[in-house]
Image 1 (spheres, one colour):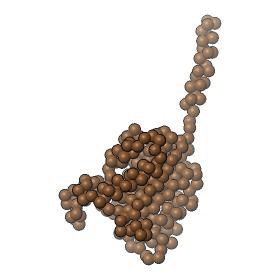
Image 2: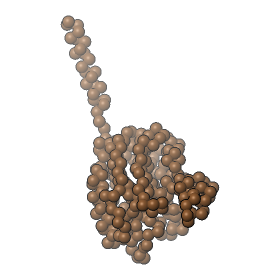
Image 3: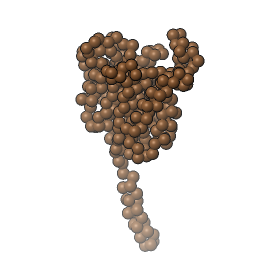
Image 4: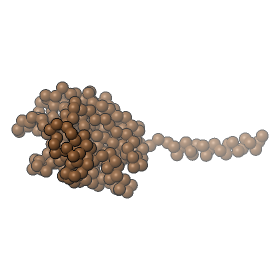
Length: 273
């Protein structure tokens, strides 16, 4: 009996050590934004915008078909600037993102022109990604070379995404939300349709997987944007956009199911470690 008691007491420190090794740790984030204007809009920077502050980031895709008043700030840029100013270093809940986006929209209605889609996400100190998506931009969570989580696009009909604007009935509360746990080694990619009209999720996974674990997020974001632009200019490329546009009235350029879609391109890459 005495021997059994001694063995049990000797195992106790080992269990304590094991418990310490499993102690929760908030992940460190490395985020980078890349924006590339439509070739015909380079002189004034295009209509896409984005921001990254602390543990929160977002992409705003200016709607090219929206009416714009000369001399006013673009709606997408107003949203990005407002979110950058109002967002602190701490992670945000979907409710907090929605509230901040509502305030940003109200300001943009007064001072800006045009319209914009939006995807805003935040990785909390609990290592959970929370995202709000209004429109056809996308936020992906990539893990071990595959998609672990994805926001859902929301559109009224083809080529008419939900959007924020003074003349639009859509509101931040109408967006779709995503919640996903994040682990060390995960890569988060948020991009406008300039990325995801030209690259499939598998294409983005391939690009991210081609880099080593020590590669900075800025290099990955730059590569995704460059590949998106290259594909957008290729009339023979089979793209997510050309596949859907094929056979639709008014889209004769895509009648064969091929062709990239030239657009402004914005992308944020976040690496978790």
